[in-house]
Image (cartoon, rainbow, N blue to C red; front, side, top):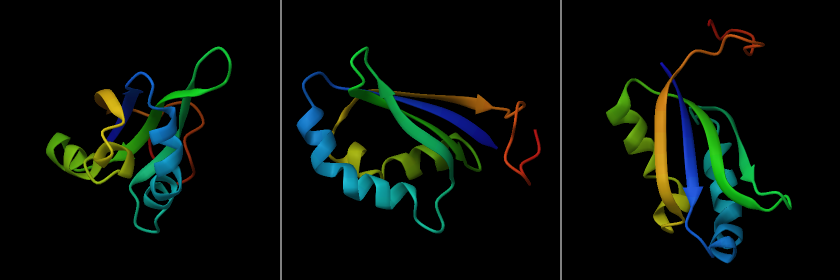
Length: 98
C-alpha cells in the first residue's frame, strides 16, 4: 500500500536539515528504498520547512518503522509527521497500479 507522508520541521532547524541532508538523500535513494516520490516542502522564499514523501509499506507499523530510520528523524528535525493511505491516480509511474 502507498502512503503519503508529511513531515513538518521544528522551527529554527535549517542547519540541522542541511547537516543531515547528504545522509537523508542516501537513505531515500538507496536501491531497496520503498520511497516512490519525495521532496522538500518550501516556504514563500523557497527555503525548506518540511518533507513530502510517497512510500510503499505493508501497513502503518512497517511505515513508522521505516520512517524512524530516516537521518532527519534520528536528528529530531521534525515537529510533526503525519501519514495517510494514498492512491496514485493521476500520472502514476509505470508499473504502479492506481
